[in-house]
Image (tube, rainbow, N blue to C red; front, side):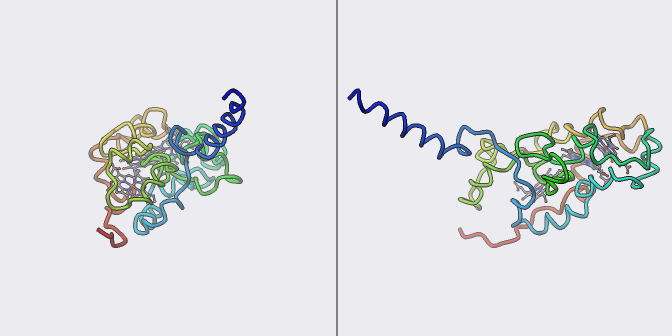
Length: 196
Ligand code: HEC
Ligand code: HEC
Ligand code: HEC
């Protein structure tokens, strides 16, 4: 039995290398393209405030708002760490936004900013698209902003430059904000037929 031990160690390490990225590993951000079947959400999100959140950091954009917040309207904020945290997807997290050269697909407040990093729940979603439950999704790292205000408050908080101290219109009421569908995407109308 003793001389089988090295073989066992090799088999064990093969098992772990094959299964990294599966149970046990932390979910990673994969970007909006991982959510490509949801065409109508992608389309409406692209036009939404969250979809355009990165553009607001460019010089010359949203000048009035920047001036009121004591920011320089002609400055380029697209590399400013302080801003990227809330104007990109998963900034500096596992698989999340780094910079425009390496992770351009994660600019703006993408799907995963509100739905959680998708590497794990996406696999499950592919396997059983119609029968997946919220509990199963959550176990694989999905978030539900309509159940948990913290999903939105991660960015809609006092660290933002645009708070009600600047203008009462920036006051964040979670329930009311959820009603503003135009700020994220159209309500889900399943884009494809399920096989039951
Ligand atoms: C990763 C950060 C982040 C998260 C998470 C986030 N938001 Fe936002 N939100 C922003 C930013 C940044 C803007 C402003 C975008 C811009 O105009 O540049 C914004 C804008 C908005 C606006 C104003 C849009 C408009 O059309 O005027 C609403 C409403 C809103 N968010 C609701 C929500 C809700 C509801 C959630 C949670 C389900 C949420 N947000 C989660 C960052 C975030
Ligand atoms: C803690 C998260 C957070 C940080 C940090 C942050 N923002 Fe934002 N930003 C937001 C949210 C949330 C909104 C949406 C406010 C709303 O519409 O209610 C927003 C909105 C904006 C807008 C649009 C305002 C308008 O009325 O058009 C600009 C411009 C902006 N931010 C620039 C910046 C810049 C520049 C920085 C860095 C210096 C920065 N933000 C840092 C969360 C953040
Ligand atoms: C600002 C936050 C926000 C962003 C960004 C966002 N969503 Fe959502 N989405 C929500 C909320 C809130 C719901 C309601 C269910 C929940 O709590 O997650 C929802 C629901 C959904 C649903 C239905 C889920 C279900 O359980 O029935 C799908 C599918 C979806 N979104 C896809 C997307 C896709 C694709 C993108 C990116 C193009 C995206 N979402 C970006 C906030 C967001």
